[in-house]
Length: 132
Ligand code: THU
Image 1 (spheres, rainbow, N blue to C red):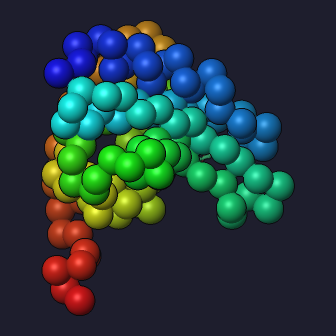
Image 2: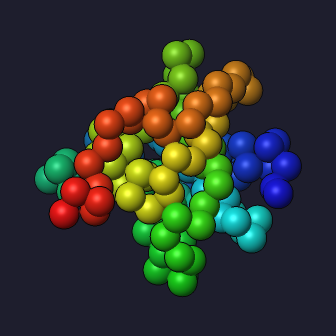
Image 3: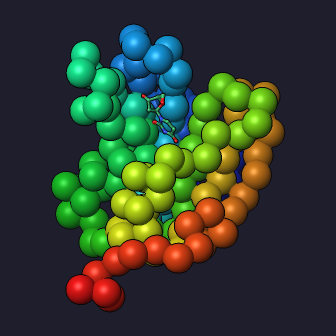
């Protein structure tokens, strides 16, 4: 397993790649798969605003596009510059659930403050393919 600090560092590092000229709110995510590989993502904004992709979804979609199978992830670190640690948005919680299940989330800020949750705590009654 990737050392917790390494996953957090990866999220903090990739945050600096965020393309966020509109919000100026930079976010980084580092997603660890079951083989210990780390897949990173940052938020990428767009002039229409609504087409923005959050850091978490970029990390997940990058990993899937590289051939990592859904539900084979164990942790994600999410880094932002807020005193109250930034949790994933509702859309990302849905995508996290569908691709990662009840994954461990490590929220972190630039001061190194961390909080750890599992997704079920933040997204207690998810809709997914089991209802279809
Ligand atoms: N954002 C993320 O990338 N992840 C989060 O967990 C919260 C929000 C981005 C989307 C947008 O580019 C900016 O932060 C402000 O909402």
